[in-house]
Structures are given as structure tokens and as C-alpha cells.
Length: 222
Image 1 (spheres, one colour):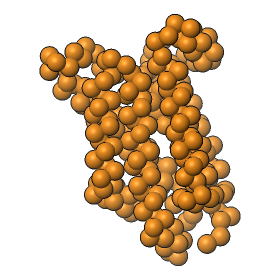
Image 2 (cartoon, helix red, strand yellow; image 1 turned 60 degrees about the vertical axis):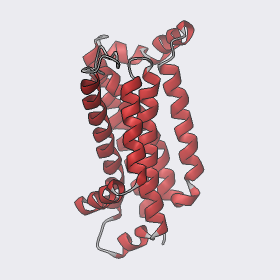
Image 3 (spheres, one colour; image 1 turned 180 degrees about the vertical axis):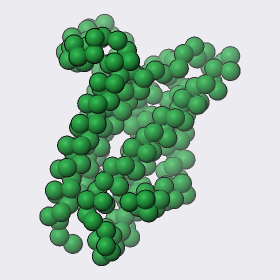
Image 4 (cartoon, helix red, strand yellow; image 1 turned 120 degrees about the vertical axis):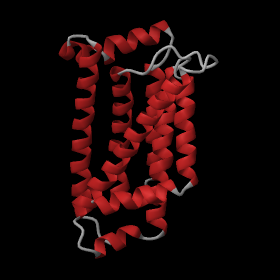
């Protein structure tokens, strides 16, 4: 698995997609204080570009056929795909937090606070839902067959992040009433506990998706 992860990040580091993804994350960090939708948008788009580049490379050079001709377990190939996305997500969040600390030193940025765990957990669950919906289709249909599904999943996550970050009072009431009831009831309505509960929910979603992807990929013929 380590070699698969290394392959993904060597490819990504040399690509224009990586530069675009990093610039998006930095833009989201700069715009965080004005509207956190831009931050959610920047992280989702960075994942979209990074994952899209790696998957398109694998498709172009028939990497899956090569992997399956080696002594690699198919479950290892699937898990490595999920882990590579999560590692890049951790990198993107870490980069954005570092950028926020640096921006606080600049008076023009007007950044008065750094993103907290509860807010980071929203980013994590959005990405978790996005890749959990897309990757099983990717392993079933391949890169070309799942491109539109990938785009549709991204648009849905954009819409959801727009609802979450909306400043409209009616929308905020809707979010608080219907999306926050479960988390608040379990966590005791504290920011730290809310964040942990949401992260655990994201992990559960990812585990279900990973299991589904492994079962799909085990049956796939090349």
C-alpha cells in the first residue's frame, strides 16, 4: 500500500492539478473570515482536482491492469485509493490552517480567528460523503464511466455546503432544526463534542463505502 500511496503523491506533486489545488486552499483560507462557504468550496475543489488527476493518469496508462497483474490484493488497491484522498485532505486542512496563522500577521487580511475542530469536522464529513458516493462508482464503472457521477456528487456537496454556510436566517434555522438535532442530542451541544461526533460519523460512512468498493472491485473483470 505504501508504494501505491507514494505513486499517487509523486504524480500529484509534479502536476498542474497540485498547484491549482494548493492555490484553491490558500484562497479559501484568505476568504474564510468573510464567508466560510469559500473555504468549504476550496477544499472540495482541491480534492476534486487531485483525485481527478490521479484517476485520469491511472486510466490513461492502464495502471489498474498493471496493479492486478502484480501480487497486490484488490482490497489493498481500494483502501489505498481512499487513504490517498484522506492524506491529501489532511494536507489541505493543515496548509489552510498554517495560511490562516500567517494571514493573521497581515493587517490587510483582517483574520481574527482560526478555524476550529467543529468547523473542520464539517469539511471532513462533506469530503467523506463526496468520495464515499463517488469511489464505489469509480471502481464499478472506471474513470470514463464515472466522470459524470463524480461531477454530480461534487455539485451536490457544493449545494449542501452552501446551505450550511448560508447567512440567510431561514436557512440557518432549517440547518439548526433538521441537521443539528442528532449531533446536538448526542454531543451535549458543545463544539468539541459536536466535532468529534461528526468525525466519527464520517469515519462510519467511509468504512461502509470502502467495504462496498472492495466487494465491487473483487468481482470486476479486466
